[in-house]
Length: 254
Image 1 (cartoon, rainbow, N blue to C red):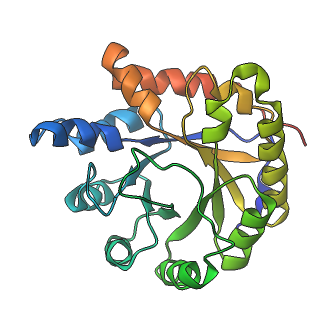
Image 2 (image 1 turned 180 degrees about the horizontal axis):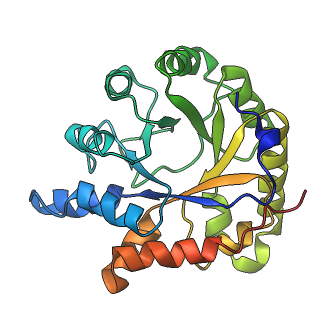
Image 3 (image 1 turned 90 degrees about the horizontal axis):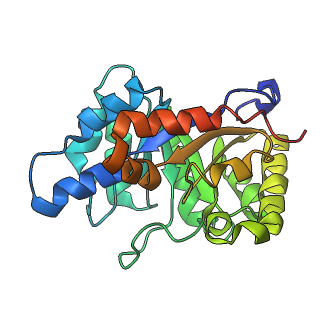
C-alpha cells in the first residue's frame, strides 16, 4: 500500500479530467471527431494531472482503441474506469494503464449511480485486484463513504479509493453537512489504513469547494461539468477554471 503518512495534509489537490463525454459527442454521429486524444492533450496543457476514461461493456462512449491511443501518449497518466468483468480486465491487463478504478456498472444507467459494494463482493474483486497489481497497475475502488467499504478496499489490497460524491452533489447546499461528515470520516479512516484518497462524481466549480474540509484528498476526478462548461468557454479554459478553484484546498481538517 501507499504510505499515506508521507503525504502532507497541505499537498496540492490534483485533477484528473474524465473525457468520456468528448467521446459521447463523437459517437452521437459516428464521426472521427472530436478527437479524444486531442481533448486529452488540451487538458494536460491546461494543467490537468491525469486523464480518466471509462471503458464500458456497452462501449457507449470510449472505445477500445481510445484506451490504447491514450496509453501510448507520452507523459499522460491514464486512469481506466472499468467494471469487474473478464472482458475489460483482459484489455486492462494488456494495455496496463497507470491505474484502474473498479466501478459498478448497469446497462440501463445514464452514468455510474453509486459506489461499488466491495464488502459484499470480495470473492469477485480479489482476483481482479491481484491480477492488476501483478501487472504493476495501481488499483482504486469507487466506493461510498462507508466504513465497511473503506475497510473492505484495504483488505482487498487496493492502493486507493475514490469516494463517491454523488449524494453530496445532489443535496441542497444547506443540507450537505451530514454527507460532508461521512466523507471526512471515510477519508480519515482510509488515510489511517494507508490508502490514497481520491473522490469524484457530480462535482462542479460551484460545489467542489464544499469538499475542502475533507482531509487527505489527493485527486478529484471530474468530467461532465468540465466538458459541459467547455461548450461555452472552451476545454482548456474550463480545465484551468477548475484548476484555479482547486488551489483553495489546504488539506482539510487534520
